[in-house]
Length: 115
Image (cartoon, rainbow, N blue to C red; front, side):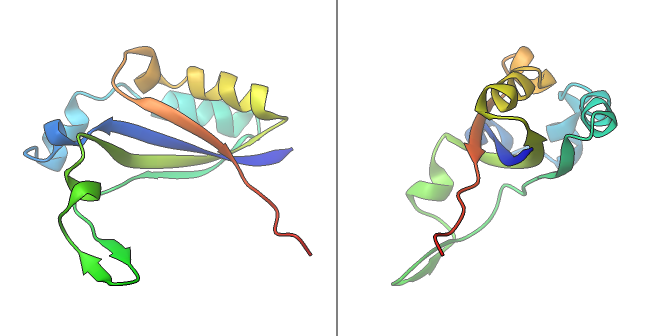
C-alpha cells in the first residue's frame, strides 16, 4: 500500500466570519467515513486547518496576501493508505463533503526522495 494525502479545498471566504461551531455545524458526519477507512486499514490521520495562518517565503512571513485571501483554500487533510492512485481517487470521491458539494479533494501521492 502507498500513502496519499487527501487535501480538503473549500471556500475560505465563506468560512472566515464563522465561529468553529458554525463552521462545523453544516458539515456532514465525517466520523463514519473515517471509521470505515480505519476498519479497512486505510486511514492514517487527518485534521481540519484553522482559517488563519501565515504565508512564509524567502523574504519573510505575512498573515495576509493572495494565499490567505484566496476564495478557495486548504481547510484540512487526511492521510490514507491506498493500493494505487485509482484506489485513492475512489476513497476521495466517497468523502461525504465531496458528495454534497461542500469541498473538493485534491489527491496527492507521496514522492520518495532519490537516494
